[in-house]
Every structure is written in C-alpha cells, then in structure tokens.
Length: 231
Image 1 (cartoon, rainbow, N blue to C red):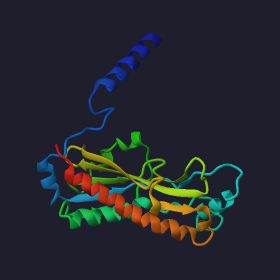
Image 2: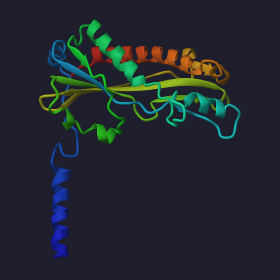
Image 3: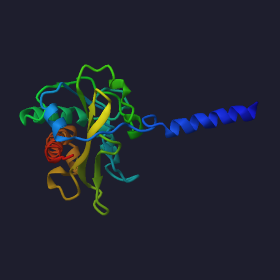
C-alpha cells in the first residue's frame, strides 16, 4: 500500500514539473502592436512595499547608534525601521511619465501597496484574474534594492542606491509582456553621497530629498528602456 502511495506521489510530481504554466510564469513579447494598444488600454499600476532602507554598518563603531536612531519609526515605541517608501514615489513618477509621453494615457494608480514579495512569489499572477484593467504594471523594489553602502576604507561616507523592477502583465492571458530592471546611485555618484555626520541634523529629510531625485531618475531610465524595447 505504501509503495502504491509513493508511486502516486511520484506521478503527481512529474505532471506538475512537466505541465507548462504550473511552475513558470507565462511570457509574451512587447511587440509594436502591444505598445500601440497600451497607449489607450486601461492600465492598473500597482506597487509592492519596498524593504526598509538597509544601512551597511561596521560592528561596534562610532555612528552605529546614530544610524539606529535615524532608521527608527516616527511612532514612539515602535521597533519597525523607517521605510521611506521608495516604491510610492517611483509609482507616482512612472505614472506621470507614461502619461506625459503618451505611452500609456489611461493609467489608474492603485493607492494601497501590496506587501513585499520575493521573486518566486511574484510569479504568481492569478490574483489579477478579476482586475478591471487590460494590463497591469507592477512597480517592485527588490530585496537589498534600497540601501546605503560605503567603500572599503571610507565607512563614514555613504552612497544611496535604489534598484527598480517594472513588469507589464496582460490581463487577457496573464502573460508577462515586458520586464526591466534599472538602478540609480553608486559609489561614483556624488549627488547620492553623504557623510555620516550629516545624519545628525534632519537625517531623514536628507535621505528623503535624495530619494525624490532617485525615484525620478530611475523612472526616466525605465521610460527610456521602454521606448527602445523591441520585439
């Protein structure tokens, strides 16, 4: 009896692994015809919550407490890290740019963010089956995509980095027709650089201001790649 049950389990696993669509997201291509359709199609732009800002910190050094203070939530007694919500700003900029460039003129922005998901979880798109839209545009900040890092020998000098992923899902067959990844900020980007002592006064405002610039520049990169995208 046990042997028979094991055979049944084995056959089920084989079917799952070999059946298209059960273990992989359906993919299509961003053709010129699809781009043309997207210009007037009903588009819902959704966003996923970004992870909290990751601060690279050496252990047991001066400044660790300062960074801990900065990243604490504004709510007293709450241990949640201050998130800054970069996905909110990117979603806003992307929707504006798609509209102003005539690339997607009928974009509705979903106000509430979905919870953060890892790549494997994002492949599940059946949740969009009943959405009132022709296409869904997803705005995603990946794990470790929002961080402040420093060079090997200059740990007091930080550089902000923001990674953005955008995907377009076609509602009719839930196929992903386009995906792109962009990044902004690096060790050579002077605008995104700051010294740890700058966090002492209005540290959150400093980072928030820089994030506004990063959200705009990242969105412009997405638009540029979308315009150049070919079949």
